[in-house]
Length: 177
Length: 122
Image (cartoon, rainbow over all chains, first blue to last red; front, side, top):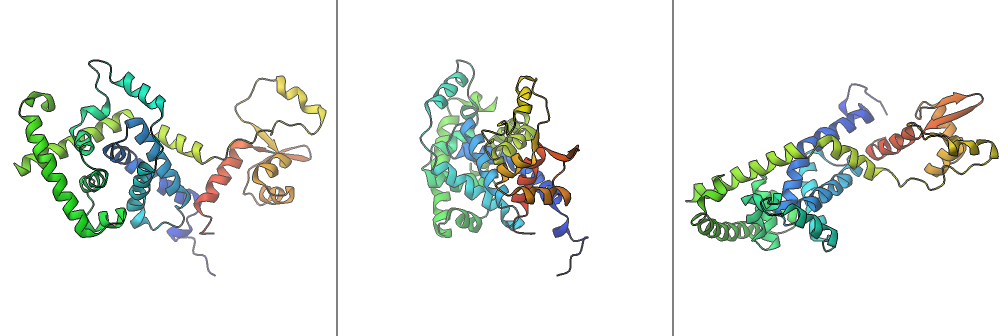
């Protein structure tokens, strides 16, 4: 076995760690938003995002870098659908956030509101679509057929277009601000 | 109609992302992440084998905590010989106190964290 010190593979521990931290910095906020769009509260989303990163970190040495993004989303998706029912403490923090005049993060953004109007698998397809994943990648992440992805996407768009048109009619100024 | 729809959602997506970037710190997130990876703190690293060091309990806690070789061996579930080998091989930083070694607790955690990163590569 010959070891070539110049190879990036053998750049050692600090190299792998730096690589992971760059990946984390790039994906951290996107993943939180992704979880929010799957219908969990912001605090739960942050917690789940962290857990997903923990799992990716533990497998960082063996993960194919090209697949890391999809693996991260897949892990987060599974954590969201398998999470225990929200704890009472989460309700309290939600109430604190939704004091009159102060809308919680989840209630201020149309993109998150939109996701919550959909059934869970459509939610996931829709969220991944806006994160820039292709139909084939989404099918791979969610373990469903590409045709299913396309029809989910179509149903989601039809539903949301109608909802948005209705929503934007009477309360136009609300979203614009 | 269709373009307006996509436009609104994209703009909302970007706005929400920007808000998260402005309010949630990556550094704090990373610190939390490494905290989650750390094995739960051993309950009795303070347990004293000999009475001499019991005075330590009354002292104010200092920032850097040092462990004995036996304590490191207990945390890592290996023999003391393995710990000595790691110390002599330069894989675990340690300071020499008289004839024995003391290892900063942080160094042990770092070593275990790094072990995650290349357990399959090395």
